Length: 103
Image: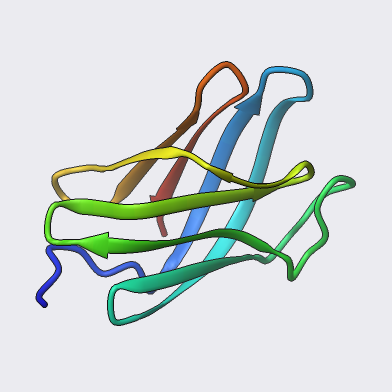
């Protein structure tokens, strides 16, 4: 299957947790076929450097599956890839809003 976007880059992550506030990190995302994982290169007091931050699967129109792994563990989230493939919006309703920008 051909994908409109490739995920295998460094991505700058910015987000806001409802209870914690702003977070920032850089994720190294690797992709094999339709599946990908993102590893934190900075980390924080809640999630260590080198831990998995995101995992998912792509289909031809975007995400088939998207999981964000925060301090409270893995959670399914909504995600949207921009038309140019350089930005990903991530949302977990009433808890977390974030954005990844391809470096």
